[in-house]
Amino acid sequence: MSSLIELTNEDIEKSKEWVREFFRVFDSFDCIKWCEQFYKQDTIVYFCNKPPMQGCDEIRTHFQKEQRLLKNMRHQIEHIAVLTDRIYVQNDTTYVVKNDPDKEIKIKSSCVFLMNIGEDKPTSIHVYLDPTPLIEPIQKGTPIHSNTTI
Image (cartoon, rainbow, N blue to C red; front, side, top):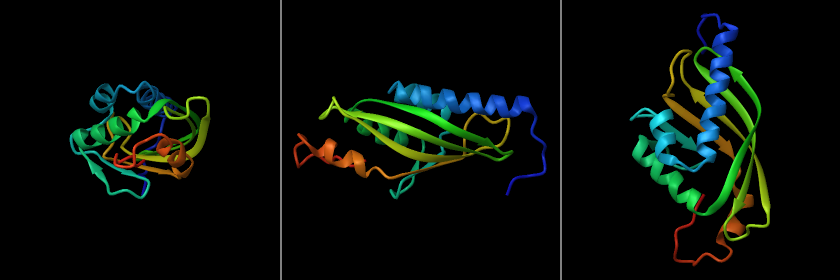
């Protein structure tokens, strides 16, 4: 539950800028910078229905594997709601898979960043999306023995 601390316009704008930068760096595929800049050593990421990932090493390893399957991705933020102890984000993500570089795949997602106002790294992040539209294009042309899960 959010505390009774009042948010200022400056708090809200600073948090929104943090979110925009989070996705800008993530879309650059620089996982090392992204993890160093936006994660604590014990941050937990809940991604879809997968087991939680904890800590920079595990988070970075997961997303580096995922990004190797993509030509690029970009997040279009649709809405950001800032509370004193969390930030809600709705976005549309456009993916281009290496195996199908002429096709853009758009997926809606929501993220919840659990972090207090004034903090620059969340305790946890919850990501909600349906990756189904990515599965076939990723598996197309990918050897069956490779473990290609999103």
